[in-house]
Structures are given as structure tokens and as C-alpha cells.
Image (tube, rainbow, N blue to C red; front, side, top):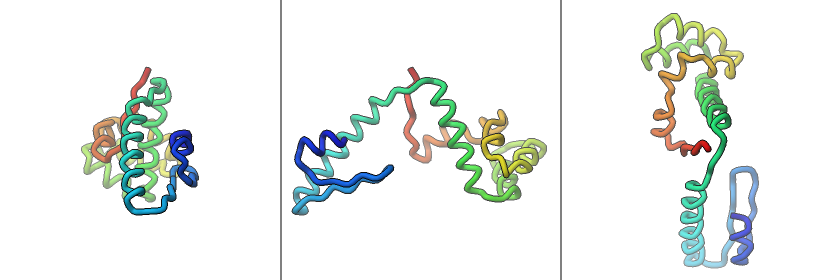
Length: 128
């Protein structure tokens, strides 16, 4: 993306996952926005990663999702609502200090499947 913006002579600032493109007019801004949307759609299709990295990313997503619940009681309640047995939900809620460990538990693959993250709009990565 950086190379494309430089090639077109645009001024931009990028930090982490943010990008600001500066243009002189609204019309130019709309045109650049259309170009960027097309470029992102093209890049999204070209992302290929190893199967191991995809597994790691899914586990990371589960850990972040649980961490947003903050407390064990909230984690327990959400897991029960998603159909996890009381025993497994209690075990997962007990280890809220170690989200990575909880996210690796096999029981969380059922209530937080890949399709759940699809519904949230998380793009799927294609494993090589």
C-alpha cells in the first residue's frame, strides 16, 4: 500500500494499523478512497500464511475475546450461554489470569468456532 501511495504522489502517515492519506480536495479524496478499497480487497485475497500461524491466530482471537469479559463470572456466564457444560465453564473461568491457557482449552473451540469470528467480520486467512 505504501508503494502504491508513493507512486501516486500522495502524502500519507501510517502508524500500526492506522493510515491517514492527505489530499487537496473532496473529489480527490473520494477517488483515492475508492482506489484504497479496491487495493485492500485485492490484498485481502492474497494473504497466505502457514497452517500453524492460522491456528495461533485463532487461539489469540479466543484469548482476546475472553479477556474482554474481564472477570471469571462473566466468562462463566457467556460460556454457559454458548452451550458449554457447567464444569468446563467453571474450569475456564477459574483461570482468568492466564487467558492464553484458557484459550487453548479444547472446549472453547465449540462455543467460539471460526464461524463465530466470521460473523464478527474477522477475515479468514488461507493456510498454505
